[in-house]
Image (cartoon, rainbow, N blue to C red; front, top):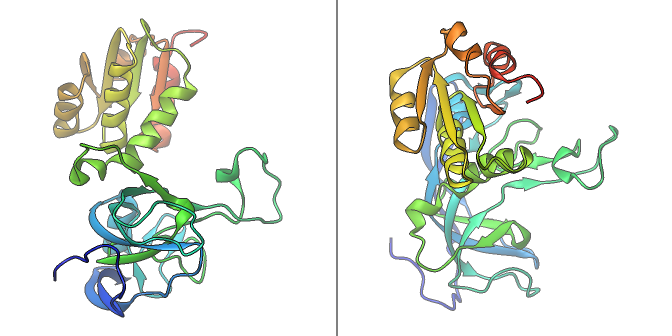
Length: 269
């Protein structure tokens, strides 16, 4: 199906999307395109990164405590081109290539820091079954999205590469929270996609030595390719403790990884 010419005067009524129905039940279906509100834009999706949560919804029908109760469109690591800008003038104009910030803060009963809306108790996320009704994602040909979610991409950045923007922002944020890492030793526990991106960001930020840890050979191979100076297997507790890193970032999401992170940090690190 050819893409739209800009400015776009007509929108399709529907388009193909990746829909998870239950564990092991993933379908490509024609889904209706939501009519945009005044502050929403329509984006033609070009690429989407497959998050671990997408895999869990497909394979297990749940991502942690977020359990599928209804069919849900997957996908939140997405990039594309605006084909219809928001009518109220907010957000990028038609023809702009964008990445998507997939979270929507929301109020709730629990207290949270007002300057950290990502911690708001009512926060929703594209492609998430954490709440019911679920929040559809954007593994679809076209997606209607709030203009505030859209981030214009720099010229020259290919859309396929830009699909890494959302997970890379997680890594960038983690390293930023660690402060100035230039000249310091760093330990990364868990070398999956987020861990590998953390390694790359640490390298760019000037870390003197980066050690990456994982239980499997392929992630360690990738970690070394993107900047790790040393790699260790996750079950080598003695070697991990001997690292004595100034900065440790835990990205495995396991209690074993957290224990390794504590043991691998230098005193005061």
